Length: 221
Image 1 (cartoon, rainbow, N blue to C red):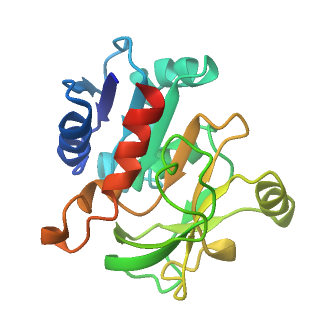
Image 2: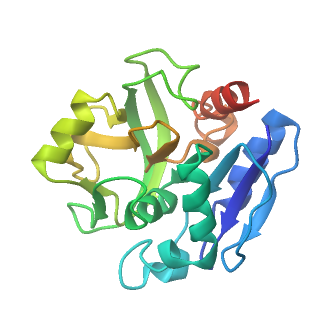
């Protein structure tokens, strides 16, 4: 499986994502600067976590208008898989590739810790190695992780099975209906606030994120 990670000024999980992908796929991950206008031929494009452009204006707002995003959108429309983690999720909503918006956390504070999550959908390239209803532990690290959308959009996401992850028990960000991750209607664009790339080994607190990348490598190989 060939992959590319987009690097923005302020990205801080780009290397973590690349290491996870390279370790499990055996293929070198292309690191693509946000100012580039082209991408190599890949099976997966990752928008990593971090604070692109310092979250100036709104989290992900400036990054969504980077030159490379025109090509990312073109590839997504052509069916290439696109994954946005944390800041990447924010960028996907700002770019119109996913519905809704990520607002300030309900408590108006930065949150950085492990949380419990429920796997809602397993028919995606990223969750096929999990069981429906499985509870996993992944870290979050955000100030703007409060997923928000109008009731009609939320109903549609639920009815179409596009909610993929939900906070279990505690809802740390105050996200609508506890939503932690969603996909687009075609199923090839996926965004989530937790960081699976930071939970690859029990030594760092949890290995529950490993299946996320194992799923992708198997599905997209």
